[in-house]
Length: 68
Image (tube, rainbow, N blue to C red; front, side, top):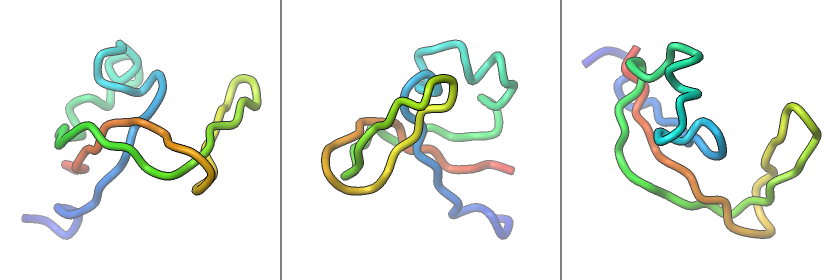
């Protein structure tokens, strides 16, 4: 294993695996899907770049391991 073998990331929204966004950005092969997940956060709509802040609600996403 390399030094990044335990790096994890959560995708939500249009980066979820069933959308084509991961393919459009060319990132699908750089992550290994682990499981569906949720975390305590709130979604905020800032137009083109939505974001989350921890706490205050529940956001559903997918947990991935970074491969490279």
